[in-house]
Image (cartoon, rainbow, N blue to C red):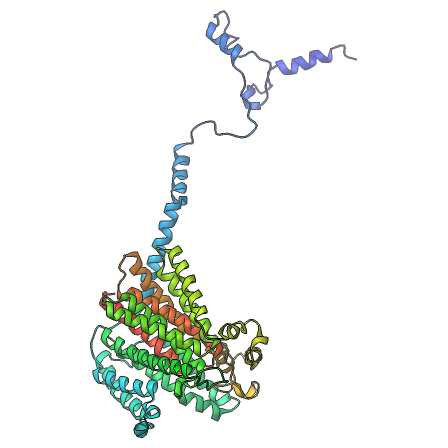
Length: 514
């Protein structure tokens, strides 16, 4: 047994150098070898160093900290990262991206700067008078005009085709809206042979759908100037004035010719019932408000505002729930977009105006509107019926994703009724693809109008284009909400409105050189 002390062995292992001859730094082990300061031999140790050794204490940190400045590379990387994360730079980046997106959106169309279509516009104007006013129904002596609408439309197309070919070398400009409506038309044609009733499908396709599509294409290509656009829009305003004045007069006289408490003006065509009349008034209300704000003439401004007041009042005496919701949607869009710089004031003013409007509403109007949410308040039970039709149209869409044929929903509906919903009308009859085309037809102009509005707002150029862009957006939203309660997907309403929006965008782009 070795008599060597374990304690001695321990001290030897700590004090002896490694066999490889490397120092403690290489092995990573500490030794009991004296420090360089204490092993200077005979050299005296300076008092300052002795004092430092006595007083210096280790600094202990519970949490990790940076002991020194970061290296230049790290600092540069951090600076680049911080620059992109500041709120100002983020806001600026989002703003620049939005401006670039709007610019690309508006530059997607290629408009030819060239006049033409004077005779086509005259034919279009006369045809629109016959479609909107139906003078042969208002004045008995003009009954000979009853069958002339077709001939005016045919003559307009005959003038349009050679003029368009000579002016632009094509049959039509292919904007997104035109492409969407052509796709929807192709789908409608394809559904006719496989429809549940091909004869009924052809009848709906022939009147009024294909007529509305053709006139829409003519309008998109013919309305090239601000004067032409306003001339046709004024026809829409004037028929709205006539409908409003007549409806209010009938209400004051107590002539309730619909369900014994509602007013319906005796005009056929696209204004054949109170709901469709209310829809037209909803669409025209934001347009006249926008034009009134944009007008520089005090007289014209108040004339537009007076028209808006008439439209709202006439809308209320129709007791149309779709018209009421559409009006709320229009008002919300106008308040939000026109009140960007004064949100609080506009919100308060909107609440006050809304309260006054409700107080001035005719009797039982509030109960009629509440029946939207409480069907038991509806005296005739139409709310329950429409809910059943909505459910049936959704079921038909799910079972027939390719559609059952244009105009064929009454065959599979309840009591041979329409769907009373423009969106499910299209989805059930033209399928999912038809619904997509229909939505693109409406959403595309809405987005591009928004791009025009934002571009002008950023430039603080609040002119006629700015306000009418807002008015057209509100009008499209009003139609989309109101048409949720009416089967009007193939009627003239939306085709005139979208044609106004596309023509407006064309005039703006040409005027601004875009």
